[in-house]
Image 1 (tube, rainbow, N blue to C red):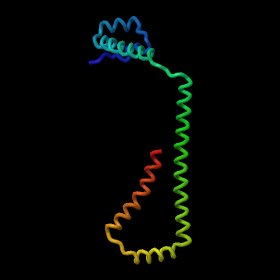
Image 2 (cartoon, rainbow, N blue to C red; image 1 turned 180 degrees about the vertical axis):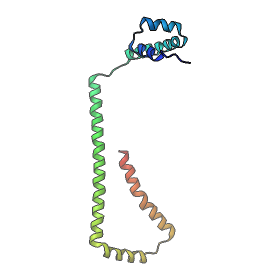
Image 3 (cartoon, rainbow, N blue to C red; image 1 turned 90 degrees about the vertical axis):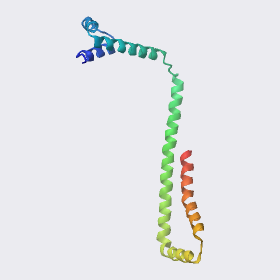
Image 4 (cartoon, helix red, strand yellow; image 1 turned 90 degrees about the horizontal axis):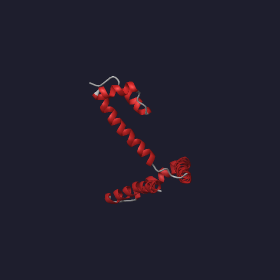
Length: 143
């Protein structure tokens, strides 16, 4: 079973001051005595780590913030460019379909009926046409 004064002890250890009454309790209570021993060791390690921590200079921090800001701005610009390109392609396709839709469909049907391609060649062409946009997207994402 745990002691009901453990929370009080942990709060006091966190503040750095254990009153005389709580100190007497920790010597009498085994659970609180163990908690005080472990918590004191952890707090000492924390204090030592904080005193040994190396803080970079203000110039280094300023440079890092500027580099991160530039990176964020460039990332947002890439997204905006990608959206703009997608909108441009959509509008161009819509215009082509609007102006040449019926004529283009007739010509496309005639072209498809005149071309006699084997199944492996059609599969290769379909694969190529599917992979080219994917390769472009991967190339853009890696920059």
